[in-house]
Length: 474
Image (cartoon, rainbow, N blue to C red; front, top):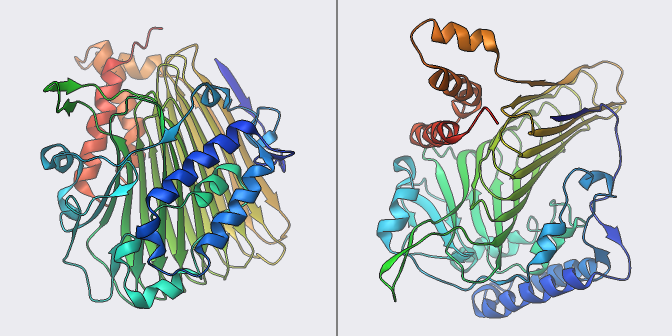
């Protein structure tokens, strides 16, 4: 068992600048091939700065190196395994409806976009039952009146200097766009489903989302990353297990206008052989309310960077996270909340369930500027270790310049309590079921906050299934 708790604040870089990194440049070249493939789709938009955005990001990549554990921001997450593979850009592919439909949920039956290997698939998408003026589209389907406005938001808040964000931006092929007009309330949840198909060689898919919630609007959004298992091989006529190596590099930008509300659920359930690096950048205007429920279950190595930028007072931010991993998985969550205006509230609860030789990392930073008086900020990371060999590195951080605030942060690391297991056994429940009940209860505190009942049930079943397979004695 390895535990680190440190409250100190550091300013580590997300990468280093040098004469360049051959591996990164090779990745860049592959991503640029993807741009060439999608050229006719994207360039028809006449988005004036799109190529300039790509060129600027490409320049960053050419001058940078892959982050190592010598860099503070990556101290506990080793990316060297990534360099063992020569990733090729994922090829467009299709899936029969019988395989895609079970991955959707009924509440968004007529409000979903589906991408397979990063390519928009209209045959599996369904857009209807949405209020007038609401746009849910890929780039090529974006109405003309929104195309020029795209320049005001795309690649404007995502932390463009970060290595993997720059890589994504340099290779923008398509974008899932959700645009909610002023004072429009969308009751139906919107599902953005990204499916990684089975690959015969290591591949990279770069995925991009842009959400704009204008003044007074409201929307519920699900961002869903998964691998399609048991793909039927059309040549051999038999199922092929989809546990293949691939790399998902995803960036999401969400803009909230004044008094807007976004309820955002992000689910990562990739293949256990996959690499997943995601960035979520949120910009909140005055009186806006943002909630994120982030669920991490898959990937051999995953990293989610979540950043909140406040541009007005009286904002409300709620970040709920659940990570459940086993085997030799690594899951890293980095969050940063910048509170620069007064009268705002933020709450963060991130929970980790770690079994076998798995390793979780939590680094949560809350910065309260001098102008952010009467801020109320709370942060807590709770960890449940199910094996003596499981590892947790946790680092909650507060940096407070203001002098009239209410702020707290902390972290806990625990194991299943013998007294709790004994109590359940005394009620006729065997030891294995008692352990599973306790694990499920720990996870349910986060999952039950999801605003979509059918997705709640799907994820609770996944947690139960995973808990049942764990050997808690190891």
